[in-house]
Image: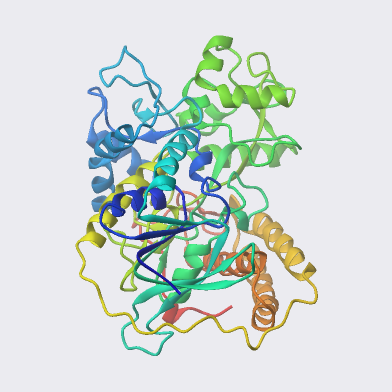
Length: 529
């Protein structure tokens, strides 16, 4: 039994920022499935959107966010996040994050522009912002005496009052598997925070790391939390198309600095689809690429930034330039082959402005949460901003709470299970899930495809549930269990939306309804697999 004031599950920007903010007054534990830097935050290239230029305004950032979100952004949340943007950046600068400077701007930092933004407002560290931010705060977390880092641990499930037979459904901590030893530990905590990121690995092609398996969303749902807007899965328009380039993202900033999308014959096509062309929001660009690829039978399209000088490309996109060159692509002389890939989960566990969920003592922040900021489509570079703002608001709420009496927590019971006789079931089911989600629940959807996916999910769930009930848990099994549940939440949400809005485009319901309403699923009314 380990005991802490706050248990944080996930080590991305949201989780580590919160840990640092709490650790001056609390004993904090951070669980992470692999190493501290293996989450999606470290992979973020573009930067963080915030109003720090005198030529920009809060109202314009709010408006850009709402336009990208197709009318579904929560107005109160959007204003809350945008208004706290500058202070979030100030906190990162104070931590020592080396953002790219520019003496010619009033802020002193170089600001770039991305799709959907009306101004240059993306502060960045070259083209590896996430890595720079995570390296900086992870170094502080590793040396802080009040932060315990449990690497190579994967959370199994939350321990809640309802599971202990109590009237109040409060979170008391979690069970976690030590992936190296196979031991399951019990962690008791006054406050538990889900910051596990999104669920990109539910799809065959994604820009997300292998850790993005919907763990927090699934655990929160099983604990009794509502989820919202799970149908809105953002496909990043430009993932490098190359057999040796797994999940390598070509930053939106490439288009922000003048990159154009072209067909194999060199014809530019985005102006045919939207007057904003390459700077349209991600859902518009991804659908346009998908349309052109399917119409012409293409494996990919091409992103051309070769008109920019070599020195400019090496300065602004050193990571992209170097990686492409290693694969035989000189972006100063030739276009980059790209395809859309799953990038971000806009929905998640419903929270308030403090990150609180429906379960007392349980918080969700970052991509795991649905705060209402992103609506039907996330505006570029608003994700890291959301992580920072809600880490701060959650920390204030947690530090203002009085301790509660925690009942005696039962140890993990493995008396009725044995070692698995075959693990091929897990790898086969994982592969099947990701393939039919890509085929049936992709950029363009139909009711028939969604129903096919739902039928297959039901069969997979039955197999996985039987496996989970009879054998010792493993990291692969736990991730697959969470992915199948998350997939079902995505499909049920998509089936319930009888319109096309933002990232959800249905051929059966191509029109957008006059009123924008969120999709909310509750565990009590849930139609079990």
